[in-house]
Image (cartoon, rainbow, N blue to C red; front, side, top):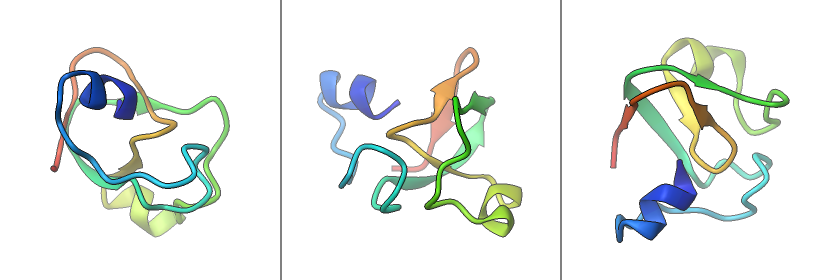
Length: 67
C-alpha cells in the first residue's frame, strides 16, 4: 500500500518499511488487507480497531485508508 501511494504521489509517513516501527500506521476505512507475518508494531487492540501498517499490509482487492 505504501509503495503504491508513493508511486501515485500520495505522501504517507513511513520509517523502517518492515512493520517494526509503526510510523506508517493508518486506519483501514474500506476493504481488507493481509500480512505475510503479523507485524511487531501492531497491537491486537489496534488491529481490532482497524489499524494497519501500510508498509507491509497487502490489499485484498480495493482498499481505502486514512491519509
